[in-house]
Each structure stands twice: as structure tokens, then as C-alpha cells.
Image 1 (cartoon, rainbow, N blue to C red):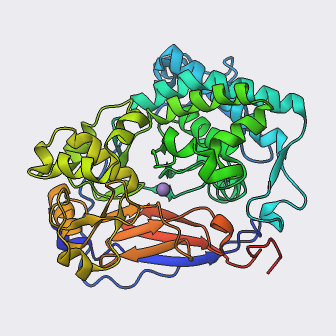
Image 2 (image 1 turned 180 degrees about the horizontal axis):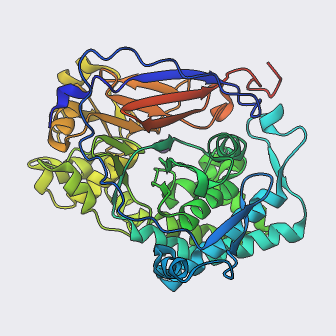
Image 3 (image 1 turned 180 degrees about the vertical axis):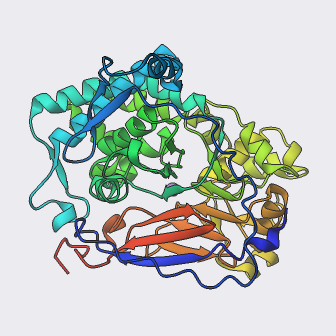
Length: 474
Ligand SMILES: [Mn+2]
């Protein structure tokens, strides 16, 4: 495959106004003239030989969530139409996953109907870590908790229907860290799939870090899990390093922003909260670890792995799940990770755990000279220890070039860091960082979303105007 023929992949950055969801979006800039003829899509899907008509239709509520599904009336249909319905893929869905879909839609309906924006909440002028939304009634909050707990087995089963490396065709919306920022997630949902996921032609790929830091970890994770469970063909939720129980359980570090503390708070008691926290972490252990869009765009929370040898995509696809947080934590020690990977990283014992750690934790190196000057045991050429510690890595130009060459990919989209514009470009713009939670940790950063479509990676960012770190309108 011709790596050089990707000049058509262009990147746009547009500012949109986060607080003005109803205003029309600015038009995309016209594409620059291509310097060479566009290469035909490498894996253009074969035209579908036959279409079926969905036997159900969706009734939406005002916020775009599915309120109910109705079956089309049958009396006006011909016999052949009925046969199409009977043979549709929907009808072939296994019962357990079908039941999970119903529960997931109930979770989404409760969030859409009863978890409502506060008049002076974070999204409209409150401080970054203060609630932007609230439950309309205790009864509805309890119903949500009940349905969320009921969702856990189906969410796990649905996650495990995906391989560890998910392949997606474009178009795909890609969102980075959300960190309990329900307000920004709701904004993106309204703006980009406001008519409901089933009517959105693009797939939706979340890059992890749904919990911690922001005020609504439980509801944010619930929204993403429910979307991914209700629409597994449309929505994929990857795991981030905050989907590790030793991180999201650390109340000492994250205090009120801790996912675990927020479970305690939402459920009104530590013991009830612990049960929900444990159950939701059991779903996190089943989340896929990376994705590849059109076999060309590698998408992951942190970065590329140091131990994957000559066929990194196959090695990532082979990573086992469920993958316990304890297993990853067991190697997160500078000396342990170094010993595991010292001689021949791809053959090292627990190379898979090191790969998983890198997928969740690594960053592009900021300083290439430092990277080249400081070889360290356990870090192959192109990699170096990260300031994050615990054996985590940063990767440089050479590591990116090797990964792209062996994987056949042209770009890497990842999250995990909070650029002030919501997006940043590294390693000759081959590594693109997307962060989808504005005002992160009291800062002034914008939130971003990427669209991979039509041979381009387009990025939109929310306006930095709106509120400052102290919650004042700007
Ligand atoms: Mn992260």
C-alpha cells in the first residue's frame, strides 16, 4: 500500500460555539486542490446487494434519545415485505443482547428525560467541577441506578462481541477524554447525532477516560456504555487509563472528583456506592483497547505499544479480555516494566500487559533530542520513560514511523492529554490528540471532536469563550 499517497488527508480546525447549540455550524473550508489524483479508497465497501427495511421505528424525545421503539403496522405490507422483515439482521439478534439493548435504551431515556441541565450549572456559567445537571427527582435517580446495574451484564457481553482491536469503516466521529463532563458530552450528542444514533450516518468512537475529575462520572460513563450497548454497530467505547479501578478508586488523589466518591455520593451510602463502582469497573475490564478506521487511522486512548513486533495490529487484536486492572497494575513499576521488556520486547513475558499499558498510558515525546540521548532499559529505540512514571513510555518520531510502516496506517488519533485548543498535532501531524472535555481541571481548554470521512480528518473545537476557571462568563 502506498503510504505516500495520503496527501488527501487534510486537517481542518473550526471553532464552534459550545453554548449556542442551535446556531448553524460554520461551513467547512473548501478542500485545497489535490496535488495528485486521489487514490481510490483501498477497501471501498462492495455495494450492498439488497437492503432490508427495519421492522421497527424509533420515537425520540426532545433531547434526541430513543423514547420507545415501535413495530411497523403489518396490515398494509405485502407478503414479500414481511419476509424481508423476518430475515432482517435485527430479527437474528441473540436474545441476551436484544434484552441488553432494551435496558440500555431505558438508561438513555432516563438520562434524557430526568437528568436535566441546571439553570446555573457548569455548562452555562458554573465552576468547572460543580454539577451542570441534576436529577429531577429521587425516584428517577433510583430508577436510573436500578437500570444501570441491570445494564452491567449486557454491557459486558456487548463489549466482548468486539475484538480488542475494533475495525471501523468511515465516516467516524472520534471523541477524546470526557472526564465526567456530562455537559460537553450532551452538547456533542445534540450537535452531532441530535436526531438519535440510528439516524446518524457516522459511527461514533470514544477514546476512553469517561470518569474522574469532572462532576458527573457515573452519568457520563452510563451514557457512553448505554449508547455502545444499544447500538454496538454504531458506537464503540475504548478503554482509557481512568477505566482502571486503581485509578478511578483513588479518592485520596481525586477527592470529590473521584469516580468512586461520586458512586458513594449518588447512591447515598458507601456500601451501595461500592457495589455500583465495582460492577461498572467489571464492564471497564471488557472494553476494547484500540480501533483502526479504514485500515488507515489507528485510534487509541494513550499511544502506540513498544512490544508489538512486526505485526502490531495483529498483536493488539490478540490481547486478551477481560483484562483486569490488577494485572496491569502488577507491571506498573519502573523496574518491573524494564525487566519485562529488556531483551526482546515482543517476546518478553507479559509483553501483552506492557502493550496494554502503553495503549492506555503513553504519550508522544515532546523532546526528540532527549529521547535519542537517553536510552533506558526496557525502552526500545524510539521510546523513553515518561514523567508519568510507573514504567509508562513516551514515543518519538522513529517509533511512530516504525508503527505506521508495520501497521499500514497513516495517522494515529489519540486522547489522554488536554491541549488548550482541544486538539494538538505531533510528529509531523501524524499523531493527533483529541480531548473532548472543556475547562478541564479548572483550565480554559476547549473541547474537540474529529470526523474521519472522505479521506480527511476534520476537527471541530468548542469556543474558548463561555466561562473561565472560576465559572464566570467570558
Ligand atoms: Mn488518560
